[in-house]
Amino acid sequence: MNNRLRLLRAERQWSQQELADRLDVSRQSINAIETGKYDPSLPLAFRIAELFQLTIEDVFESPSSRRSGAI
Image (cartoon, rainbow, N blue to C red):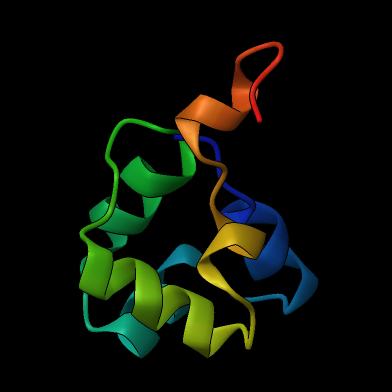
């Protein structure tokens, strides 16, 4: 799943560890989410969106929205 997590984190000048601490997850989890190797659970996705004061859709791109002709 594509996401804007790295960009959002960089805009705030937070390290991966700082973001991980704010979300109570490991730095490795943040790295895996940013690189697309791991999709966060729904509760974690909500916590991420709330931390950045955005909707989940503003942070994460639905895999179906990448298909050409998707509604």
